[in-house]
Image (cartoon, rainbow, N blue to C red; front, side, top):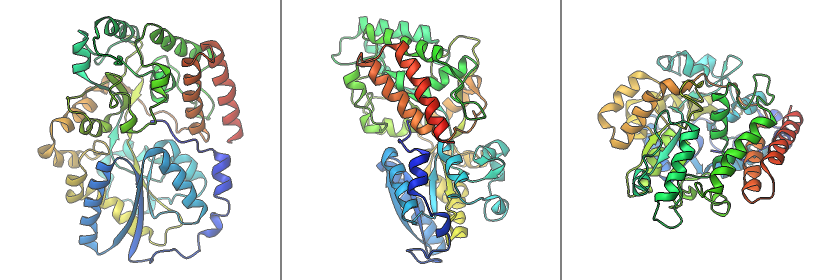
Length: 428
């Protein structure tokens, strides 16, 4: 997924005065209601409401809720901060954890560990993945990784074996070319144009020993890397292996606008926990595999990460209740069975064991994928710096410009470095 165009400058402007609002009265009763906001599909909303109803039945605490799709969520969240109505419990993304923690929007949770927050079984790695500078700001909702979603029937109809674990980028291009030759279905392509998809670009960079960002928050790649990346996808576009520009721009980082779901591609690039939502929107069975790799001995490009996390507002007048709800959602057998693996594979081995009996075939594919990915998964990258969301949108837009022949790969690569550097400098 690509983030919304939330900049640090806009965030600070909208959220000015928030620190002074910590003592302002809430719009809902302090000790009997809490508000929870999350992003996701309608299916996720249904599951979440069932789990919240179980919490209310157990505690008597009522929960006001709001759920939106990914892009609308972050715009809405910023507006709530500006209006001094930050929800008590917040679904948070790894990308934005540092931004909101550094600006005092999120409550440190260390004091609740072993007390109201019973997540020691998650393991230190999964606790640290939701921390900033050693301070815990989130509760891991599940483990996931990036993944290629595969329409095997689409590939089979073209007489081509789809990409699998260990397929190289060179072999992937060859498969796309073979798909073009064998495909008989109109307006069906092997793959999206991933030139502007940040998660795919990041994996490619990491396989080359680089990455998106350094620990200091500067770019960890140069214009040569970007030019090579854009050229790779230009070549695939040239022989018709990926969707053309006018189709790729339809993708808005939601399930229903996926080029796979729309029937234009036999592949999509997403996150492993999204397979369930993809499958619910398609009649034919889908598979899941890793992104292509640079070579058999390449460094791992992908990694395990918190699919989402639960954070508590620093403004909350009912912080303990919000922590209780977060704890309930990740360790309560009742909630765990309801939520399943929609938000990722549970971080706790005990919780995963609890789910094994109820996993359907699609859920099992996700679990097997996470297990099988281990040889292709490396360490978690540094937390994205402020401005990373804008850089992701910039990458996407430059990918579109090149696809529409408004830029060459060389000019696009140079523009990416120049403008991304400016974004990061202005965001510090």
